Image 1 (cartoon, rainbow, N blue to C red):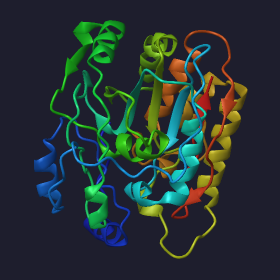
Image 2 (image 1 turned 90 degrees about the vertical axis):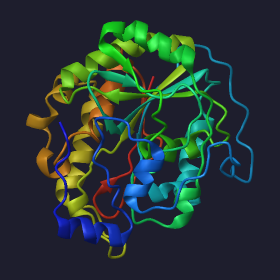
Image 3 (image 1 turned 180 degrees about the vertical axis):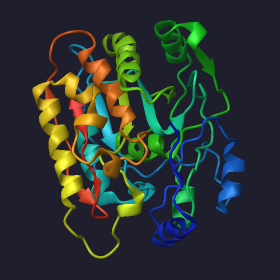
Image 4 (image 1 turned 120 degrees about the vertical axis):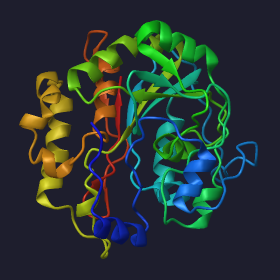
Length: 323
């Protein structure tokens, strides 16, 4: 289930271009300071520092919840999204449409660990799990409150015997980069949960068991990418996506719109060019957890695509909201 590392030549090229996420998800939490030292990045600031700058205009007042919270999947792309106000504005507009949230449960592509692990339940320094990026990126903070009550609830829903705690693990960039824009005030409690498997049925089942959280004011958010092959990204201008990427992206939209769960569960056999789009599957896996949370309770959720488009040629920015 682990990502296959790029060759040394690929890694150097991607790092120099500033998009390598050093994104081989860790099976165990690394202390943020150690992770940053290993990457050669400057020491991160404490999360007690000044929160990230909010958009110039305050987002609209949020509606009171009138039913289950939606489920989301965000294409988090490169870490530099955290410094991009144009792309970030699209996420802020999406998040502003959500009702008032009690908490957010994030399933990030950058945390694979079995059995299921729950991250910190207090505000800790962020994990800057990448290298070769502008210094400003290592100064970003996102001091969201912890959610100990949510950790207890997730443990109950998934079964205490199948869940462990990782109290020293802060938010990785698959969580804090999109949340910086989705909820820029950083005032909603956030809990991260690991991907315990790469089996589609197991991930869907995990989402289904977590679905009751939606009735308790919790947004379940998967964070990954619809297409993700760092060896195929382009840094020359703004090229159109290659056919293997655009066809995969189109296939997914059709499958989700039709509610074809059989196709979604067998995506590695039925989607176009799955091995090119996902040499490793961790960036697609969070979408399967989100699908389980949306469809697992019965009925057919509404489908919306709040953000679409491409970056670096073949990375889809597509985001999904269900329900």
